[in-house]
Length: 444
Ligand SMILES: Nc1nc2c(c(=O)[nH]1)N(C=O)[C@@H](CNc1ccc(C(=O)N[C@@H](CCC(=O)O)C(=O)O)cc1)CN2
Ligand SMILES: Nc1nc2c(ncn2[C@@H]2O[C@H](COP(=O)(O)OP(=O)(O)OP(=O)(O)O)[C@@H](O)[C@H]2O)c(=O)[nH]1
Ligand SMILES: [Mg+2]
Image 1 (cartoon, helix red, strand yellow):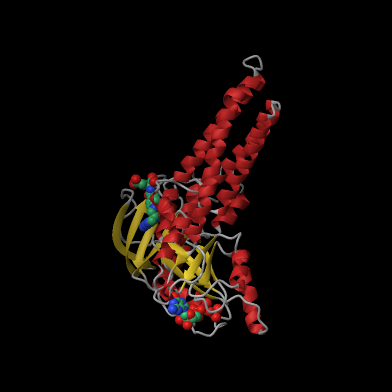
Image 2 (cartoon, protein in one colour; image 1 turned 90 degrees about the vertical axis):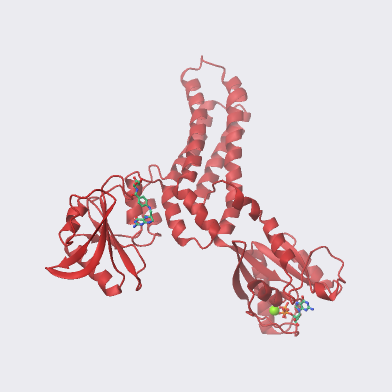
């Protein structure tokens, strides 16, 4: 089955300058030689050859063909790439020709899946390859690149190594109880080792939460009573007149969205209807939505009109957002400050919002993260598995503290260990792999 030659268009399937048609499988160089005029059969690996693709003696396209001899290739198998002209018709024609000669269309992610199955990359690296393609900002792409290079793999392998050290100590003790006193071993060695290990795990889990925000953007809700300048703030952040601004309270009725990048940080901003008690049915639906947004947001920008004194409606909103990750914004700073409240002072109308962007950076510790030469778990699958690993280890640690017999403790340590293995995809089941690689694009 794995000897199949698979083929896919690896580039954009729209009209473009060049298309790359990628093939992988046993003897694929000889396979392509059947319909390519350049001589590739005896050429060295990682070389490019000029020639024509021919169908029944008729020239179809002028191309360049790259050959890669196994196993030092992306998939670990012999590979060929045909660089043809990037027309939709011509690309399909070349693919069809490959199919007629007996190749089959690759499934989504099948090249990467083969790379994984052939031991070229582990699962975290495969996920990183998918991530670099979907990356939408510099954080996401540089993280993904680190992942491809194996930084997560190394980190997880180190954790596994530490854990196996602990497990071995216990196993030795179970097998040869006369070696050392179990309780002493626990107190002297196992507990400190385990504690330091779980600290490492917890730190990376915590850091990875911020990373998710960086990759996917920070859901930012602009909240406040009517007429305080929420839509003006959105417009100032977006540097365009996206939302309608008037001096009539209740202007915004539905949510208005827009994304902006602040120093590489993606903010997905949502302007909401001003929150107040209202009899107007449309407005009150908007107000309900605003309240929902408060719950969903990663960040709440609570806007207060600083040119007026704080009233009951502001007070209510201060309470409503108290448990959220919020920044209190005192807007209309150009009119002078009358409100007695600590907050970030801006003027949305004058587009004077620097203090706010600074605060956002500070809040998410973003300056710090971008400069660190560190690695993070980059998706939910990995984070959940590491959380499971940490919680099993925590159970073991608690048991150690209570001097529970080590043969019982070791079970939890093995649970933790198998979660770590799962992150790398060691002994991964077929359906997990299918599920995972299905999310990749075709040709990857
Ligand atoms: N034309 C083309 N461009 C591409 C890819 C590709 O497959 N084809 N890639 C695919 O996603 C990415 C590059 N990734 C690659 C990873 C490994 C190997 C490879 O041949 N590795 C061998 C030899 C390395 C060497 O010469 O040192 C190896 O690792 O042993 C090639 C591409 C992006 N650009
Ligand atoms: N002087 C001054 N006026 C501002 C400032 N920000 C907004 N305004 C004015 O305040 C009024 C209301 O602004 P909007 O942005 O529509 O307020 P909103 O909070 O979106 O209001 P609703 O959509 O009704 O909830 C407009 O006349 C704006 O020009 C500011 O920083 N300074
Ligand atoms: Mg508005």
